[in-house]
Length: 457
Image (cartoon, rainbow, N blue to C red; front, side):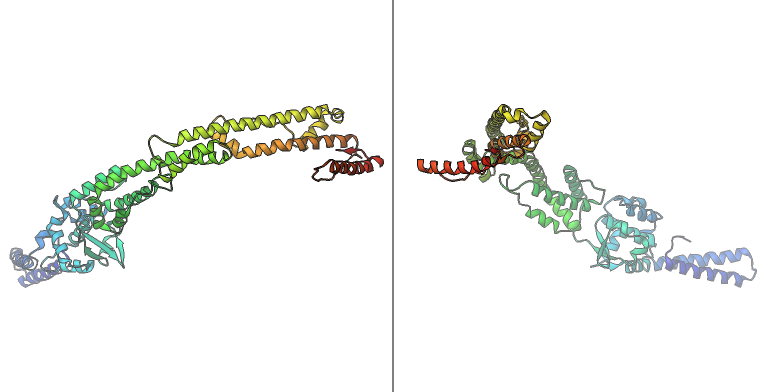
């Protein structure tokens, strides 16, 4: 007897055993030879009956189906090699029969029941192996409670409760090879016969690249990715085939968009630097020279134009700003030098010790300023961000008052009773108005002097 029986065959075998046992009892010690003769005849008759009951059994009669199940679970596209089939999965007689019987879809237990019974009598490993091989070949999809299952999700305990449906669009070997080539060009890793997941990753990469290949002016506008949106709405084999058919466009766009994205990433920082430079140079004549060119770059989205139009503008604005910063710092330094000279010439200042002088300089913020670093464009911007041209003007103007404050501090250290007179503030247009103001100022000052309180002006 053939030992590769399904459940139905095992039941028939059991019945054969009972018949044989009965035959041996009937012989009643009539001799082992006679018993064996009867047993052989009954077994031969049973085998003939099985052949009539399961005429399609031989199609799946191969001990390698257990290995097919194992290889298919591992995603092996050559899983049917275990049963000596090396062609297309759909051409396997077992796979073709199961696929052809599926209609719009069937439960796994119904498929097992159909092909486990007459006229097939196929072993369960053959049925399960064929189903898994069909899934590996993207010829059949499986789901449970509406959730799609992969081959790896399906152990043989779940096959019976899974829903199997034929895939209407076939993903041929030629198409699969074309998609693999595209994935390699795009640098998307994939596993053999699991290209579908890699295709999803490819479309995600392309959509992200489309966003990076355009931006707000002066960068070029984002390219249209409408066809990619359509591809993302497909699933399974339909999506893989659609990507295969669009492979030339995808390859072209991949190279073009990557070049644009890299260009934008490389040039946008310099454009932002130019914007910062022009903002710091708002009151310089160079703005009138450069601004029209910047406006043209914005309007016509010329960030990626050749040659690059931005660096020459940065050099012009940066050069003007370096000159302006150096002039502003020199003015500050000169005012500081003049103020310190006047302070050193003051009789009160000369009476202070070095610690007292240092304390007053610190409190009145009269320490020397550091030379701004304008050696590079980035250093220039950092210096201007810290102290703008307007700030240098304000600081220079403030030095006069700060040196006056320092002199007041020095006087108060020597004569604590000294006060700073607050003289009236007004606009003087005539001699009489000047005389009147002088009389009033004299009166205020004399009030302090008469009370033996030194006045600081």
